[in-house]
Length: 264
Length: 302
Image (cartoon, rainbow over all chains, first blue to last red; front, side):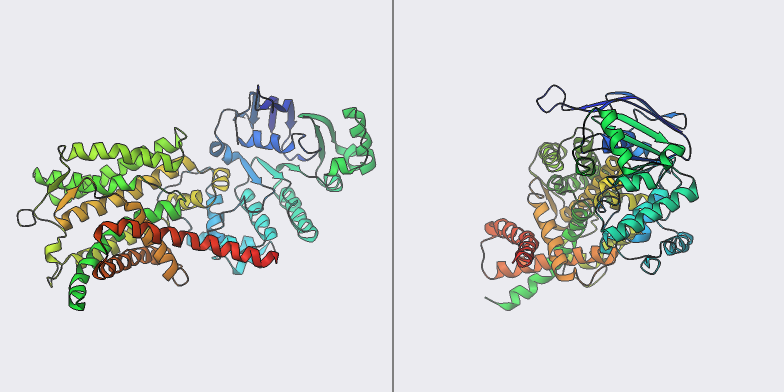
């Protein structure tokens, strides 16, 4: 379970660049909820994920995950609960380290790192099998440096790393935006499959309204640092892009001249 | 110019190169593994020697003195680490601040004298330049090969552990490291401590080798360390992929550096111009990858 209570964040307060990025955002997610998040640029989608991850501290409000108040914790202390995949494929992996070393680092998320081996022999076989499930041939390249992989391969690996230790919350921040359409589709399908298999509570930011409708059991639309739309269940299943745009216009009180504004 | 004089100077150059190779391995850990240019080492390269020599002059056992020298270096690294992580000072400036304060501290350790001698005839030293042409186990080249091999072995083991992998991840991608629950600040502090501990060890050995510690001993040390790292990258980068081999390459890089210096001196260069030469060589080699990148980019755009 995730509870966000009145999250407030203002960037550059008391300056000409002041921006209220999150305006008293509250949200409750149940275990197994898969929420897709849409909204224009600067609406606060990524900001909300960063607030949960602890990239910076929020101004006020509470973040509670499975009964644990993680609001004041630094980023690395929250990591045990969170799995994250970023928009930039370079961000989620250590390029100068081997594929198995990256997986082993992820395996130890939330554990004390001491003088035990960085990668054990048993892990090697485990990771080889796991990589084989991706169908990308990475199981034959386990000691290669991650820097040699393509963007799509790196995102698939990051996804594997994020979910290796089942996180309480998986956060996908436009994680297919930098990929070509075919690879993006592959990574999306893989994400959906992993989420379903592990019954993961997931938040996925996307700019593609079709994907937002297609995946998950709940859809959130943000605008101006607020959640302006929250659709779930049957109602979400029957959504169309057209209906979503009308809803946006109604909820935000703004007309969208074209779907470009929302999709960009 | 007599080739014989050059050849007779070579064993000394190799021994010095091996000692500075230990120092360069310390620099490699911060510069290449942690991705931090740590200028503390210019100070630590005198601290280790100061602690070791002063303790031995006051009757301490060689090994105890060496151990304390290493610990002193680690404390220096800890201070830089705290400046950088807890106080938010950029790494380069944090290193400069520690280095500057170490100048006073080193003088204080040395009883406010600019140098202190220690004679191999009266004290049991691990390495001494007097033995550089002796055939036997007291030859500093032989001793330094063993020291280097042990150091590389320990470091290879450590960086294959969980904590060592976390250190490497921190240097490779801080963002990813934090997301995987790694305390990157702690890793940086540990890395700086290990690096400066190694540099202090090199300092203690170098003071023994030359039979004296000098407060200016470490000046420009970072440049020599970087030179060794760069020489090894250029010469061995394509063939040494294993971490232990890379560390060996750095040690060899320092030896090559000292042999080249010896040749340049033999050719008649004024000793006082050495630092200028070293700095220029390092600057050019640092620029080469940048220029190569620019050329490649230009070719792509054309």
